Image (cartoon, rainbow, N blue to C red; front, side, top):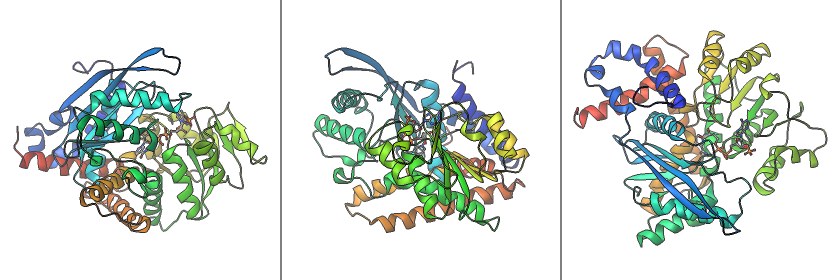
Length: 433
Ligand code: NDP
């Protein structure tokens, strides 16, 4: 904390990992002797830079851009870019640190990184987004590349923003290196299913968890926070598998319908109309919209927090347990506070941590890198099959590692131990200093 003052999200992420690694360090003290965790919490480098841009009225604005390159022991740095006013050094570092472990769990050769800017894309025109993104890339382009660091999207950054970045990067480099980004539009060299992958993956993870309890998603009532890239596709896949989405939220409120919301309509409102969720009621008058209450107070079988960090606290956890929830699966990064997780664990709620449950997005990003390198493209079904296999294997790795340390069912500990061991062993093999 002395070295990194005022970085609460970063401390939270590190603390969770450090706590889970105690049993591993007791069994294999050489990780402590080699100071592996101390090395992992110190990024290889942290870059912060000015991003100046002009709005449609010609007014100049200045934002701050970031990229943290945390660890490239097992492959090039890989992680998304977030455009949101809340982005700061602490947020970028917590995301980058967790990314090391998530990426290791996928079984693919990708290291951990993350970045973004404190820029608010809401209400900006296409041209403003383009000018901001180009200015952002003018600096970031110096530090990335297909074998160095491969950014993707995150909150506030989707296919449109990534494609602008690809264009600017190409101009600056004088070379067509589309492999420097993932999450590109299909025509620009993106992979089929990248858009769906994080949400679908979280649902596949949930199915694996339920399967272990001789249960399944079919017929379950679920609530999902967020109405963005992760949540929309988590809802789509859950409905596909027979679940009923009774509620979903965005940053202004939530919509609710006991018989089930129509996911196609939610997608139309958020992806095409780009409106707040309240506009869902223009299409379906049987649903209700609420800005006052917490969505987590509703009764459900499964909850998928898919919006942002620390969006579900201890009181929310209590309400979910009281109202009969049996499982919580994190589609977002660190959406549950530490106290909320402790509460779930005490009440034997099945808990799928983001690092494992939302790794499907970066896994398909790695498949996009593979397709870009080989110039051979796979079908939606082929990628979907690979994603299902990857999610099942992440589940298995987490469950097996937890069992090995007598922590059966603790997927946080299992995921952290399995991922740490993979990266740590490579760091040792590459030289202990
Ligand atoms: P998006 O920007 O596409 O969507 C975020 C959604 O969350 C928006 O609908 C936003 O509302 C809503 N939201 C923001 N704050 C709140 C809040 N407090 N309560 C309820 N809803 C809220 O982001 P993504 O879907 O890409 O990312 C969501 C999370 O998933 C992040 O934690 C991200 O790091 C993580 N993640 C994303 C991956 C990806 O592939 N995209 C991969 C792995 C993790 P509004 O529409 O009003 O803005």
